[in-house]
Length: 93
Image (cartoon, rainbow, N blue to C red; front, side, top):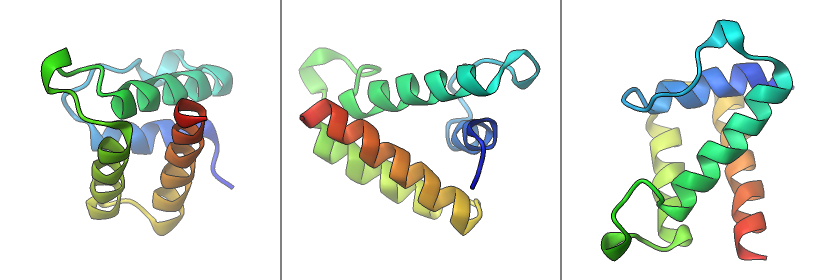
């Protein structure tokens, strides 16, 4: 089982141009909260202009493709996809 700090580092590697907090100032709980917040923003497409936003289902598809193409371990990939599923369920239900 990976820690949220490890998952946060893996997630950050997917988004080199996004400014997420630095490792040295984060706790496990902070990493968890930041991960959920970043994934929700990603799935809701909040970084895009409102007129061109895509549905969460489309953004989820892109997120999974991005994760699978990333140079991460299989454990990291599965854990990140699992977290995306969890956030997606919170958004939709």
